[in-house]
Amino acid sequence: MYPGSFDPITNGHLDLIQRGSRLFNRLIVSILRNEGKEPLFSVEERMEMLREVVQVYPNVEVDSFDGLLVDYAAARQATVLLRGIRAISDYEYELQMALMNRRLAPGLETVFMMAHEAYSFISSRLVKEVFSLGGSISGLVPSPVEARLQRRLSKSKHKGA
Ligand code: PNS
Image (cartoon, rainbow, N blue to C red; front, side):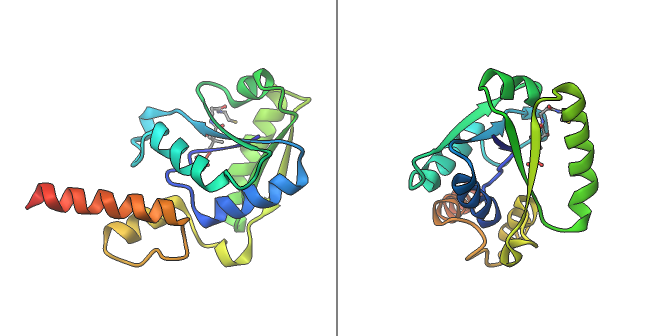
């Protein structure tokens, strides 16, 4: 299971999904339903974008979850949690989560993969910031995400006009 916020999915996430799909028989990409985080895209929109980009991987499924990740993993009979690490700054947060999840569910293993060096500086937060300030995000996100961001921008410009 590959859990995350995916608001929106970046090429860094997609690289991890592609590599994860080769490593595991099945991979469930699970979007956290946490409205408290004030996401840019609704869970449904994120699911649509993810489904569009992972349809080329037959063993990858997209889903969403609420509550504790370990409970959802148990409900879906997942035995491994997959997470990506970009830089050393990710390590502390990931270590905390992995150890807490291990305490909550000792049988569930967290496996880390190093992000591809080409994408190690990309985050959903930075993509949104750069895009909203008019910078190019070409090559940082899959094309359906870029298209949807463009639509968002032209809609808000239209509203503001
Ligand atoms: O992409 P993100 O935002 O770094 O993903 C974080 C995520 C969704 C993996 C984490 O926030 C999570 O698992 N949340 C669900 C609630 C939970 O189980 N919390 C305890 C984790 S130790």
